[in-house]
Length: 181
Image 1 (tube, rainbow, N blue to C red):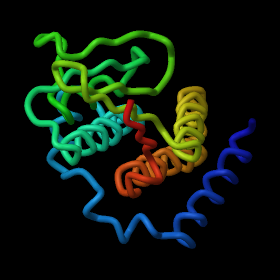
Image 2 (tube, one colour):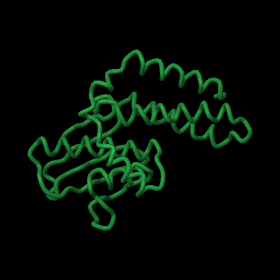
Image 3 (cartoon, helix red, strand yellow):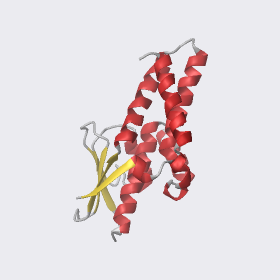
Image 4 (cartoon, rainbow, N blue to C red):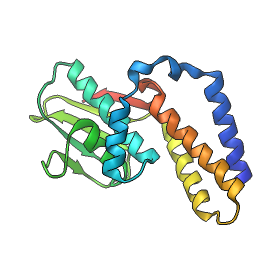
């Protein structure tokens, strides 16, 4: 796909966000900015994957808490990628405490449970959110290839920023599918 094609997709996405700003009404759904700042500091930069880890982690944790689960949690994530760092910050499961296991099946899917494993929830991206994830990957590849086209690079980076903004602010139901197991 050409840079122009990606810019067209970004333009359509931005127009969709303006026409359907339902995510602007759901501020209570959005994680605290502090979580994003801590995650960026831990991870070294902000990227779509980091934000995805935060969103699915918090949604799964809140679902378990709403079901009456308290105490420590353990996680299994099925992709060895950036969302793992977002998960560690968002839900407090860490490699050092051995409360997160990463199984590299290249799936953006989380199984979060209480320590006993009796209460488990699966969290994964909605179809639309997964399309946005794939678009961000494509944009990142295009950005990395552009050397001298500053204007084109700026447009693509704005597209990345728009996608990341959507992931930060959209209601949980638009970003994450939850299912108790």
